[in-house]
Length: 241
Image (cartoon, rainbow, N blue to C red; front, side):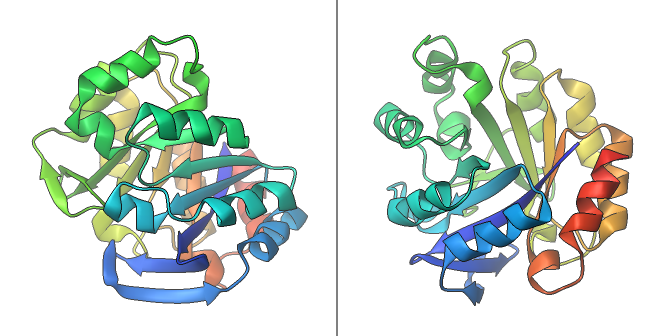
């Protein structure tokens, strides 16, 4: 299982939101590249990057910061936030991003998303479906707009697609250090053959172990690392089993 330490970007800075609330922001660093180097030094293979400004507006806003992260380290970058049209997908793939997480656009325009999966220009293993839910209901537009679907139902729809991943986030737990929602995460895993990355609520290394035990392909670590509650080297060891 992979551990993906997170860099959430807002205004070019490294921040975290509590439960997806843009009014409850903590800023942790001014230099995302330096944070990325710290992750690389610990042995991480992936970095999960989110453009929070783009998630809210639908327009990429932190491209320069994403580029500095990509240039700073020889790690695979998984990027989400505001990827809602084919032009943006093309631009980020040209930038060298390893995997793009598409959430709102997929949930609101499934035909467009299916078109990406059927287009040979976009290898499916370089795409991920982002499923962000609060209280069992999916949310779009930077977690501000409910969607009439369930995470399990959409996970089942991409079975056999060859997608690189499904990133399932429990919004209510995100940034709260309350533990991963293992129950729903397990249901998503059981609904599909696409690898599932768990996100939201990681509080310590035991959460990493539990994610591995239920069959996650990866787990995203954010606030727990920034506040010194989890050691990345130890987390990577727990993920390896």
